[in-house]
Length: 106
Figure 1 (cartoon, helix red, strand yellow):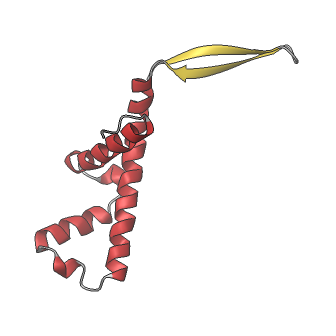
Figure 2: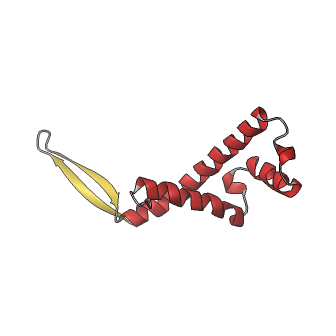
Figure 3: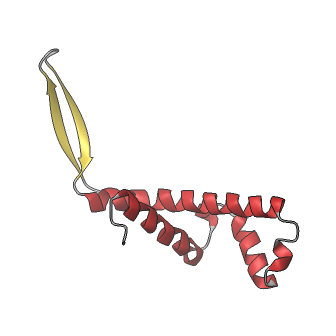
């Protein structure tokens, strides 16, 4: 992400403070995508744990391979997931970022 440096002058104190802004929204968004994807995974994992606690037989109601995969994913931090499995969290991050940036389809 490229940043642009700006200086802000305070006429009362005579001091100048520097700050940086992303050069465009796309650069800011791309930098946030992985963090939001990690958050989305943690949220999903928490929801799955809730289901596990509140719904007896939850895992038994699913096809065995799906239950195994979801349990493994639920107990794996985002950064440790295979790249292919992180993609669904990135897709959720894209939907969240679209909502933040006002790009939700009607």
